[in-house]
Structure formats: structure tokens, C-alpha cells
Image 1 (cartoon, rainbow, N blue to C red):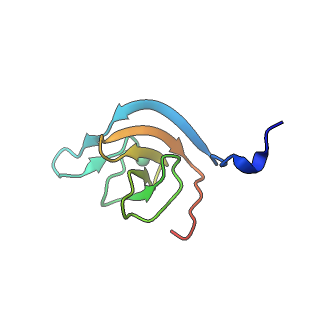
Image 2 (cartoon, rainbow, N blue to C red):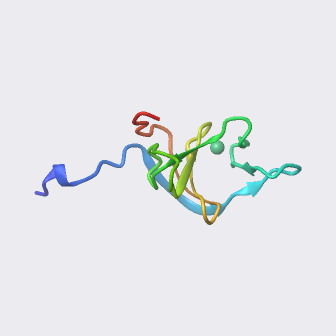
Length: 89
Ligand SMILES: [Zn+2]
């Protein structure tokens, strides 16, 4: 049996089929599949498992309304985490 301490728990993360983010019809904002965009629910910096981290150098962000995890440089939804580890963020 493997040593469980060596495994990082992936709390609540579920991978989704990769899907590119859309932009708002009139504004230069990202729009999540749930309809949230930057000025409403907003997005927070996170790890690729949706756990919240400092925005500095973050490569992923998470929709605050539905929990979808987005890869920033490709604007692609990669998964969802409805119950992330928020740390101190
Ligand atoms: Zn969303």
C-alpha cells in the first residue's frame, strides 16, 4: 500500500473536457459558461486543481460562481472545483 502522506489530495477537483472561454458580447471580459464574468462573480487565481493561491504568477483561475477552473494563457476551461482549498485567499 502506498504512503498516503505522499499524495497531495485533490479536494473536489473534477476534470472537464477542455473548452475555450468566450468573451462578453460588448465588453472585453471573459465570460464563464455559467454566465459569470469579471465584473459580477469574478475569477480568482488558483492552482490547476482550483485551490486558491496568490495571483502572482498564477497560471490558472477559478470562477467564483460555479467553480470552473480556467487555464489563463489558453483561456480554456479545464475542470471544476466546487469546494476548493481557499487557504488564506
Ligand atoms: Zn462560472
